[in-house]
Amino acid sequence: MHSKHSKLAIALVLSTMVVASNSRSLQLHNSVVAATHRQEGQLQPQLDPVLRDLRFGNESEHSAAKDLLIDLSKKSASARALIIEDLLRGIQCPNGSAEFVRNPTLYLEWTRATELIGLIRAEEAIDSLLQCLDCNNGVFLLSPDAFPATRAIIEIGDKAIPNLAREIQTGTRLKKYLAAVALSEIGGERAKVDLEAAARRTKDKDLAHTIRNLLKNWNSKSRK
Image 1 (cartoon, rainbow, N blue to C red):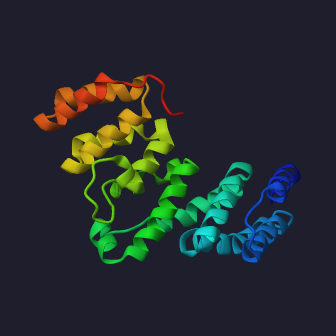
Image 2 (tube, rainbow, N blue to C red):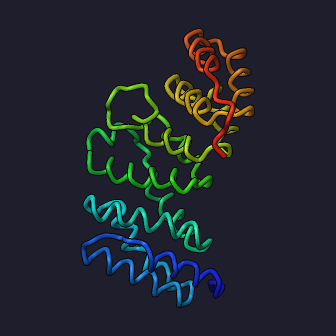
């Protein structure tokens, strides 16, 4: 059961935020607020429609659901755990990019869930994100913004550094590149040390060259 303090804090945040102008969003908002005053077991049914709107709703519903879930994840450990559990199911995609190319709707749903994983910095999802680090909808760009899982793992920050360092050693060529770029965007001394080590160890001359270029303009301030 939520503590009285936690319930009050969540209710205060939710009651003051502007969820959206449409009645559907307001209904979801009020339902989740009410759930914070009841037993924890009753919170999941109230979260379910918000999580559905996150992945399947129109732009307005999606935006409202995203804002609501971010606030809930900050104010309630129990709500955060339920949200992450649902998102982890939503980002599983065994066939990766091939399936996303065939099914743009599935790609949109996956991208929305993956984005929220990054925004709430859910380190529980690091392994799942690494499995689809190079997933996208077939657009060939080398920017991490073209790969939602890479962008999400960058947002998670320092906690992902050891996993990214391993990916540079064991991943496919594209994953190695994306892992190196992710480390450079996370920044900080830990990431720099791992990239320097990767540049020395790799037998891929192109990757080594890329890493050296990333190290030339290093960001000493890491994402916490």
